[in-house]
Length: 122
Image 1 (cartoon, rainbow, N blue to C red):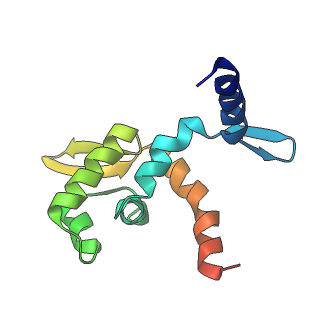
Image 2 (tube, helix red, strand yellow):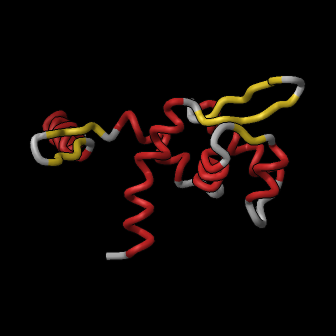
């Protein structure tokens, strides 16, 4: 690949990573890891179940609230959500539970209009 075509690809990359909305421009790159996680099986349901409870849920409550899920995949998603900063694991009064972080609540709230649109269709 020549330097010239590589420069064009970098320029096009810069165009692709930006979303313009009116006067505002947002870079997509910082959100890609969280968007990837949200697209994985059961992630949205876990965010919903924890958020619907108002504060926190233990592992078995989350597992039981998500039909046809397995303990392995729920455990994996909870670890992914913790690494991403959306969920935190707490140990209060000898009981381990999970709750949404401030970022987790923000993402959950931001997803609501998108989910509502998908529910009502075009």
